Image (cartoon, rainbow, N blue to C red; front, side, top):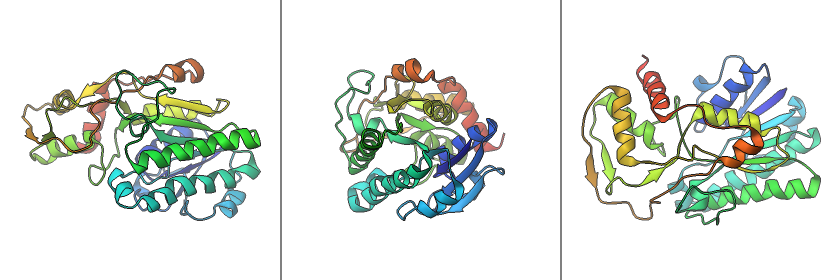
Length: 301
């Protein structure tokens, strides 16, 4: 298959490119390198410098993709609050550009959305039918992009798929900027820096390993449209995650505490049963094994 991976120079996108190449596909990475790095791109994938906020029709006409894995996005919640127009320009208008460019080639689009930022507080593992209560413009922009995929499916008979991801972690995640807590914790351990846990550390998240997410994206190309959660169905508190990171690194150290951050979600966990039932996908890497693999990547072990 000839595949395009938007955002393929980034953290998750590069794992998708790896998985496609391992399957024997021809892979083209579309990225403006504003967040990603060429070092993440597999040798056998071809990089095309392009910004999804600009029309992509000519590039897609040249590449003639059969599938498009759309990961390019504005992912910083704080940026979305400070500049919701910029957030929507990338996440909504950029997605429309991808959909328009894919149409002449009948290329199925698999889009990465977000679970935690769309569902808000979870009393239990959230299924896809849960109320959608985004707490930031970022969550709203991802939800709007999902609705554009669904509209395309109704209007044009396409079969585009949206995946609502849990908290993704793994090798190549940048520990700086709007980084995941796993990357932050492990980098602090690498640097022997103090770690701060906000609040009492009872906040929970659903941590899913990046290569498992890549497998889900490949599995989704066979779906006839729809929205699917991609998580583990298990929640881990910040305190428990810190302890698991220390165990993965083989060290014992304590963390400092600070006042809770205003507006932080206390509980976020996804129900992935629909993905198991309809996509044949389930996570295969335990949190411990994923943390060990991430630690080894960060330390070059």
